[in-house]
Figure 1: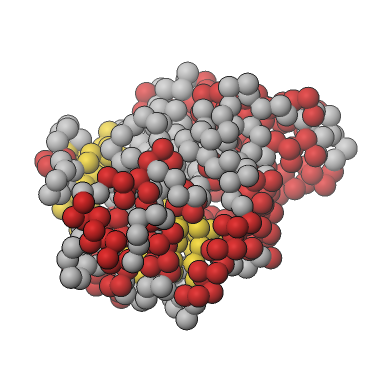
Figure 2: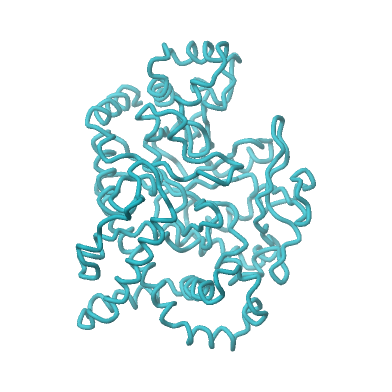
Length: 497
């Protein structure tokens, strides 16, 4: 796929401003699109938008569904506009923060109101023929994943949130009679979860329409793996390398110089089975994804070439081994089905000739992040002046510190090398680095809202390998000023080729 030169801003949906303790698909999202238009930006990138769980620290990269939307992102004001919530029910949770997400309070608050909205939809709007027809059309259209997801969610409640691997054997093995019996018994719970997904879907499609009107491309994210306790694995056990809910090996990455590697714990794929089915599950996943976004980042692209498989009984990531991934056959099959491959790839950390060849064969832009640069080296792949054209270049990412936080922690020698490389006096390092990224040869350039605001490490969104305190930062509603939009537009115009 050929890309035109573009630039944009990364901001995860949960980090948007809003009245209910977390960003959502309401006014804050639409106002951010307005900001991007004023700032002459045409890309909005965010993390995966699937459901999150407290067990996984609300990480968007460990979701119970690769297809569903996050209920916490549903805009409650839109439900009130349809008569399903009262104005008095829209006051945010008392413990909600403007600059941080307090997930426990937010989840309880939103869950109660979503349930109330569903009950009113079901009982007080019986004459809403158009709405009910739209709901049933959605359920039919998305039934391939929605039926299993809603039953999974209903069963999680039935069994006190136990993982599906601890459910009764007949459900673990998806006995058809047992599934039918529970589907009938839990029909109202299933219908509620379908209602929530319908509202997420309708609100998202409205947001995407507004983005298109402003010529903003929505850039989504595709986690390589899915959580073991997920609707995806429960409903598609033959797609994954597991037996009776127990993986023999799990995903992760090997040790690198300076770290001990990571054991993620998610099951790996049965690529032989997937190849035999022409990668049907993945194609269905991408069909759903591109209903929501225009372009997608493939996280951990390395695993399509080869993946690190760690014995499930081992705690040490070093106990794993490299195994062959599906390679070019996977992407040729995707291209045959989808007709295009609108992907950029995360290829950090384990770049080798095999990965580069796979990436370049399909023309996928690769990631460049100056915070990984060796500033004192004459040339380095992460220095802006050395970026290739086929790259998506960032000032920082959701997995790194902010530019200001990174710059403050540099030793004097490295800071001096960076100052020289990007021409900064250290007064506004984030904006000076932004201009260097914008002025590079990379076809796609991205910054983050914390970098636009010059914020330090307090605005970091995620620290890989840690389980607490992540995914919480939020931008306040008055932070993205007209001056910032004007300056970003000016940099974009000045560096446009």
